[in-house]
Length: 253
Image: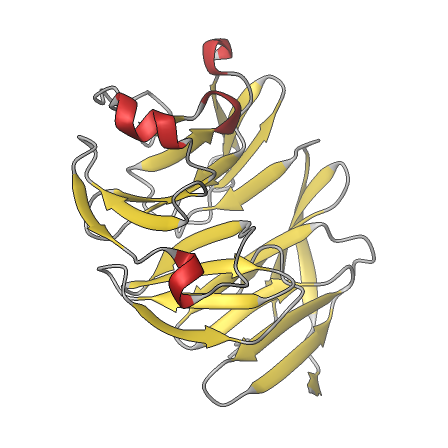
């Protein structure tokens, strides 16, 4: 592990008590709480809100496509999409066969649909927004028998990353074929950029190159980071009741 020096300048602090937050590639911030979903646009200091009490809390947001934001109400197994103004997009109702499987993880797909992890079948499936099956993996108990409780799913650059913090990160192609296992443990949430995993400890930004097996650590001017991500030289971190935007003095990789 190499420790790198970098200056981080605080740009803005947003009050936000939230159980989940993310940021899109344009630097707009999304977070969830009991009232629903808030989108904050730093460039114009504007906020937009979305709420649908019929489906309960929003447990996951995938905003990697700013025009097609995926939301997942896990308690009601409801998957939907919002436009840039957080207006719901019209979608078909999921068929009973999918709802019987009760997906536990979801994320957007670059192929225009979305991925789900179905814990009972122990499979990954890629579906269209019309809920038509497009691709799926073999059952995980056949290829990764130790992966019995994965907790995070994200697609990046045509690859799918499925994480179980005590086992590592399994990498699949766009058709659900297993590639390889990254034996890096302890990550609840992370970003992927190229061959790099980006994640945070309570006071550090960590970048791990899983090809070169090299880890770079940046000491951060926070001591209670719950989660974070980077967009270019902007770094977004969540504490217990705030989201803070920092500017890195130089390139992080």
